[in-house]
Length: 189
Image (spheres, rainbow, N blue to C red):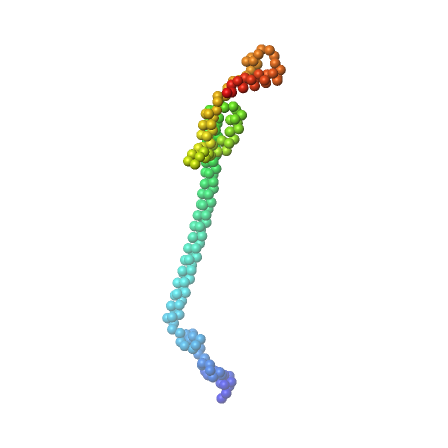
């Protein structure tokens, strides 16, 4: 018989002579060999193990994700706290600097003309701990520098002038200014 008639006759011999005979069973693979059921069970066990490991990995990932969020939140809170502490420290340093400059100005108020003190005050308020290099090996703070500089100034009389200190004759404003200028010039050396 021909190959076509054999295929149509539904016999266990395929129409293609190079094809293996058909076998109908659950334990046969694509090549027609019988499958060992213990191998299938082993594969199913391995599959269930992999599924369990995958589930555990997902849970672990979720846990780590939650921990990372909590850590991130805590870091943000700590950064805000650090920022607040820095601002507070800067305010405290500024208040301390202002107190030091005020004490410095009060100390020299009697000896140094007020215009000089007012000219130096903004420099000292900017940063009184600023280092001034005097030489290769000598550094000094700006407060100490001005303290030593003012110590070398001649004494300035801060005597308050009034009309009773000058002549009793009524002077014009220009004459009063000249008299005061002479009195101030007399105190300077």
